Image 1: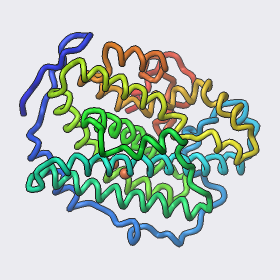
Image 2: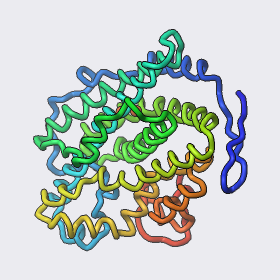
Image 3: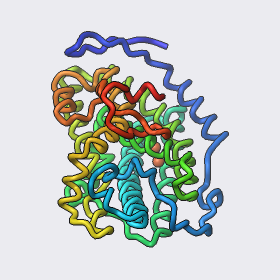
Length: 335
Ligand SMILES: [Fe+2]
Ligand SMILES: [Fe+2]
């Protein structure tokens, strides 16, 4: 283990760097011990239960809004189905970006090293995840929610020009946020068993990806000159801000007969939704702050959006998600 100093607006941060090959060796062993093949490890023939949610209700964007209060149970389930399909569609797009980024990273590196072997192993994991999510979406009978035109076009460039620091920071944001929601979904018996199964598979394999991204990110921060780091850090703040409407596309609301614009505005201004997003982002934003990616100009962007965790977060529900407005209890007290 070595340490390095990262200079930030709020002072110097000491960042610990582990041996890259040893980290990769550990992750390769863990991958060999526990990996899934969703084609054979998932019972795709089991029918959906019309009574059960597709996401924990607290994670549905309209939860605790007047619109939610007026919806029937069937409409709430239907909205959760569309919101999950929207999230998984975004998940597939992000995984394709990551696979292209990892392959771009590997293309320039030595294939005899263990960290390149791990990057290839992770690419194989993501291939299986996208296959699994695609099959799940197909089983719901819904169409995937496609990315909007700008992201679709920008995505074509992934793997060609992406600087590693920005790539791993964006990956970490997506992986940590997805992980937060899937961890509560996988142990919630109000959620469809098939959703719980695919969430469990994804959480297990993503834990290794998160470790890898964190280690690579620390290394990239240490070697990126401060002005360049700040430019990329502001770009990452932009990714964070745009993520929420990409995860839950406004078109999902039309599925339950709501006006998409009005419902989107309701979700956006909902204190519960804002608390849920802060909760889902908390591990990523905490780590990015620790290693000097959220500081100075990028911290100002993050703060303006209200996405950084604060001490007045609402109390969590039993499954860990924020529940009701309660000014004195912090979200992380329940962890
Ligand atoms: Fe994945
Ligand atoms: Fe991943």
